[in-house]
Length: 206
Image 1 (tube, rainbow, N blue to C red):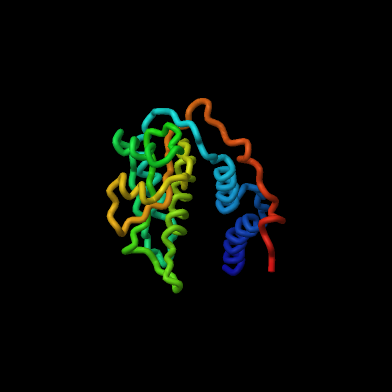
Image 2 (cartoon, rainbow, N blue to C red; image 1 turned 60 degrees about the horizontal axis):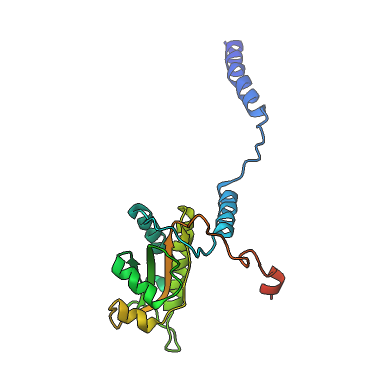
């Protein structure tokens, strides 16, 4: 009986040892983390400010995804003060072209504002509205490029002109415009696009 028990035990133990002794094949596959980092840098490097747009309007599905990216952007104490106007009617785009020379033929644009009633205040009586809106714009700009669209962040306009043109209430403060859409066939990055200062010039370790 003892001999039979020993044989049964060995029958189970041998396959287990063999399994544990197998060498696992080493695969140098990138992890999700390293892949994401590489993909983001490629995305950031590939995006450029488009200064000639095709007249083709952007599909609503893509606009929704761009706006969703903006919703996910971080803001001071998550106050989310952004107010984004999607300009796409002929009337709205005529006004956009009136207040800025930098629409570049885009058939639609975003007007980025912040709501003074929702913005996070600073101790010096200032607020984080402009910073928050810029972060939101950056998220949307990169998602637009991810969807095959071009953008151009624009600060070249008078905020008072924008308030008047679009009949904005007193608590809404225009900060940036961003025409967006499909790049024209002859669109290309500026000659300065790939001219970067070295990290030695822009980064200091303390």
